[in-house]
Length: 132
Image 1 (cartoon, rainbow, N blue to C red):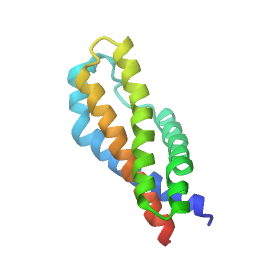
Image 2: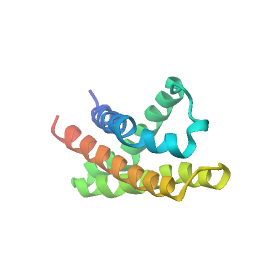
Image 3: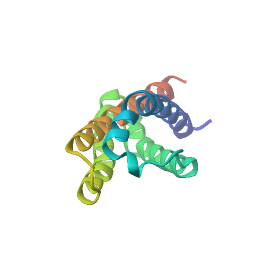
């Protein structure tokens, strides 16, 4: 198995595990209060799957592989945080600009979550790919 694929699978697994817990246990009630009328009854699995598959490929390419080349987890953490803040920031700030009910609280929590989660997943991808 290639180094990229090892990093991809480890990053994807950690990202999905932590994000599912966050969405299911923490943030869903907050979203229901803020924008409940906009939420689907069930999530669109193909759209979510496409996001996760493409996003993780970008994280591995831009954060994990450079960290493996540099030999330091710090690169994965920093690059992951930047990618996460940019990606989640694009989503949440755009929503804040165009959707009624999108709050500054949602903007801040999404920005912080994107930076944290992507940084953590990139570090996990680095750690597993570097040792597996």
